[in-house]
Length: 93
Image 1: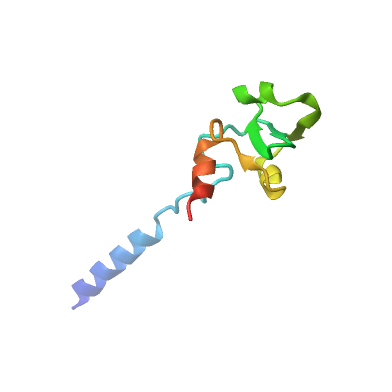
Image 2: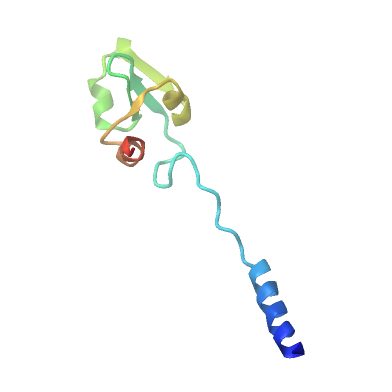
């Protein structure tokens, strides 16, 4: 009986030493941390500053954001090219 309790204590001790996975990050992994964001005030679409579609935005309609959550809070839609994974996550019901 003592051996049974010893096994249980060893299992519990081992489970207490496990490291927890890191919490999810925002923006999702794979999106660069040092990127700024540019939105089109007409289309209401936000792009990474290095997206090829930024060149198509009229300068008068460009809105800059340092953080993506700020653009999303103002109800801009993520670009389907440069922010495709984020857009796909938002489109799911």
